[in-house]
Image 1 (cartoon, rainbow, N blue to C red):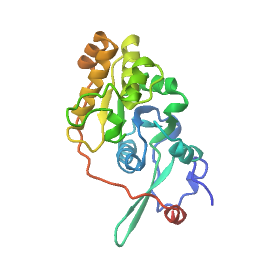
Image 2: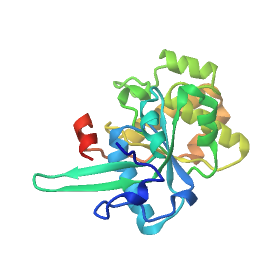
Image 3: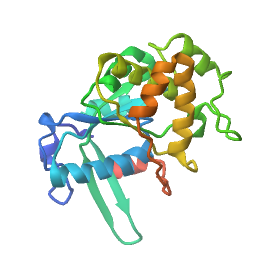
Image 4: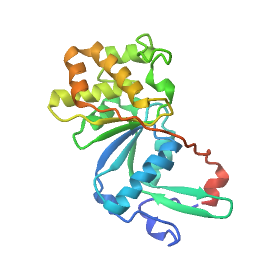
Length: 241
C-alpha cells in the first residue's frame, strides 16, 4: 500500500481535497495537548479551513502526554492524514495538512515546554479528558495529592501533567519577558475554561505568588462547548481510504 506523505500528495485524485497553501512555509501557531481522533477530525479540520481560505501561521504542533502511537502513525506521513465524512449515501475525503509535527511529552518534557514557550505559539489547546485536569470535580480544586501534580511541583522543568506543562511554559514566558498564550480547553466539561483556569492558578500559586499574578494578568481561558464524537478508525477504514 502506497503511504500518504509530502512526496505522494501530488498523486492524490482530484476528487479528494488537499491543502492549497504551502506547507513547507507554514509556521506553527498552535500547540495541542492530546492529539487524538477528536482533535484531528474537528479542531485541526477547522484550522485547515482557515489556512485554505486565509493562510497565516496557524500550523499545529500536536503532543501526546502518554503514548507515542499517534506520532508513529503521522510521522511517516509528514503529519498528513485523510478525514472521511460519511452519510448514508455519500462520502467526502479531505487531506488535512495543518499538523506540522507530533511530539511525545515523556520522551523529552523540556523540549515540549520550550516549544510551548516559543512566542510564535499563540494558543495551547487541549483534549486530555477530565482526568487530565488533576482536580476534584466536586470542588474544582486542584488535587495537590495527585502523584503527577506532586512530581511536577518538584520537577517543573520536566512535567508529566497537562497542568504542569502549561505552568512550566508560562513561567518560561514570564522569565523571558514574552507574552502569554491562550489556554484553550476543548474537553467535554461544563465551564471547561473556568475549570482549567482554577486548576492552573492553584498550581501557579504553589510555584510562586509572582507567577500566579502574572498568569492572572496575562493568560486567558475561553470556555468551549463540545458535542461531537469520532468513531474509531478500523483497518477496513484505512484499507478503503
